[in-house]
Length: 116
Image (cartoon, rainbow, N blue to C red):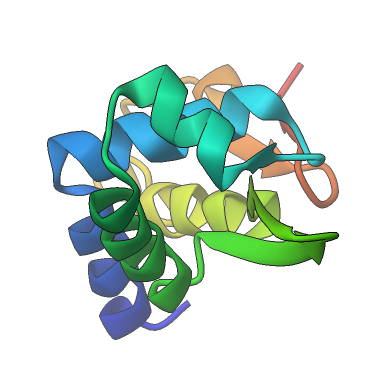
């Protein structure tokens, strides 16, 4: 991952509403949730929600799909995994302070496992 993409993704998450929104979508799983349900659960007006969803989508952290007349949004678990992997990429490389079980190992799209 390029540092510009990591910065874009971290910047998108650096807002209380967007972070709450993203955490909700992660909890909902791959099926995601309709925009109306997200707005109701977070107490965010529709236009404000749309603004924040667009920021997360531009950063590649969420994807939208149309189901009938509504839009469903879901977290992109692969993007999250790539971001966390980028952050851990050189974990304690100089100091050797991290035990092997602390570093995440990608285990496929949407999952991360720890070293045994």
